[in-house]
Length: 425
View 1: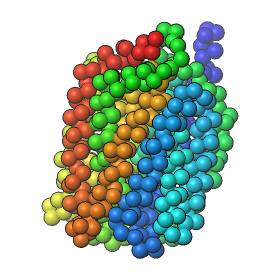
View 2 (view 1 turned 135 degrees about the horizontal axis):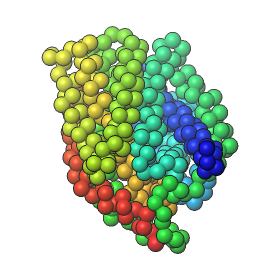
View 3 (view 1 turned 120 degrees about the horizontal axis):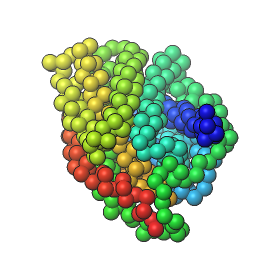
């Protein structure tokens, strides 16, 4: 065995360890977000809140998350990302625990704002560490493993929140995430910082990043169209996922909310893991034959997911338990883009502004996406006496729109990927 192979072993082990830790943190990230959704009926009953008010709790988190993300993205482009993430994980875990102490709706609202600030420091930095550890040819598959935490963590959040609310108290759903969050945050301080751009094509020596360099993001078609597609997808998926347990329990008449949370969580895990990993693998494998493959597989998934979601809403023709099949298919199609779309963000941006690029994406997709849709669905439900079908129909067109944006972006991807290393001179 050559000395080169021997020297490469520690780097490979550290890359895998880094991905494992980031995956664990991202898992906790989404558990923390969705324990709230599972506990909505219990919280709503205790605080006598309307559907619109409960939807605003999701918006509170997202508003602070998206507003502060650009600041933390700027910091992550300049300082140690691991230290920044360590502080962030500990901060949001403590804020989440404080949600369990809330004695009024106003205090609960404030704690969700605080959770958003903590998670905003993590979101822009984590994928850029992975991008620096793995080359473009493998990046999609590795990022798919990282983003697999979205469906798994969301599902665990539904299950944990549902079980805690049913057998203990809804407050315990928030208390339970604090100890693992503090432990994972402390581990971040032990990780070495990878060189920025280490796995990208060789770049020209460059000056200090200026404002004009960030504006190149808005002049990169692949970046703009990817953000547009992710915004439309987030608008639909964020609103539907927040209200789905209550929709199935109260509107569709499934009597046991605990059972609904467990089944919905299990389907989300299976569909999410399989779709996220297969989407990332498909993007990597097909990119050698089709330059716009990451966009193509993302767009195709959404176009197939749109009719599957509509089938969920036709209760007279697809009652439960048969409707669970269409929920599974819709989730599979909607998660298929996760790895490819986040890989696009990494591949078409220069390493010097990559954290900011992810942060700007976070700001856009939440400002125009799921910061709007949960309260919108709640308001429509209030207007139509609890009939959430009208709210779900109002947001479902965004699924189709996201597919259109992603298919449009396919023509630009190869050119923008090749230009990315030299966009800052």
